[in-house]
Image (cartoon, rainbow, N blue to C red):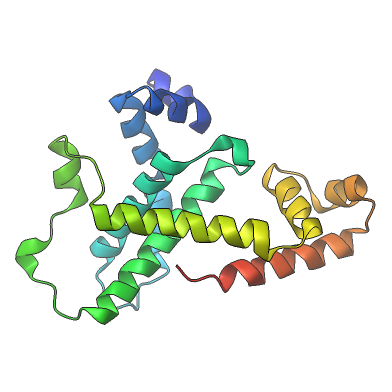
Amino acid sequence: MSDFQLKTDNELLNEIKNNNKSAMNELIVRYRKTVELIAAKYTNSPLEKDDLVQEGMIGLLAAINSYNSEKGTKFVTYASRCINNSVQTALRKFSRMKDIPQSSIVTLEEDFFEGQVGLSAEDEYLAKESVSTLTEVLYEGLSSFENEVLRLYIVGCSYAEIAQKLGKNPKAIDNAIQRIRKKLDGVTF
């Protein structure tokens, strides 16, 4: 077991900021299964599973590059949303451009192993737009109560703990979380 496997996501992210390629590799390997699980939700889509996984990996790289722990969200939550958004964006792009020349497709693995990890300008722009939209929804689309409930839920508090901290009953917390989910499900990137 390597030293990296013992480190938390935040420790790896800090090392990545210091240009540690091994930490980047570990985080990518750690979240590969998450990418595959998210891509599997779209099995009836017009894109092949490998293409969906590739788009999910682009979302993961965008999450790694743009994550800010000071916002109060766990990396796993942020990364999952970025991965899902990247897959959905690819599906929307595909529906607009039916015929993609096969010669223009380069797999993420080829770029990664050739030391060319990075996003195209378009994908980087789309990733930043997705993050911007999610931030806007979280901070402007949710009430102050919903934001507080979400913040406590993300840091791992149970419904009962949130209810106690906010002086509400657990049913009010459950209702708030259901409203938050509906608002986030309705967000398109």
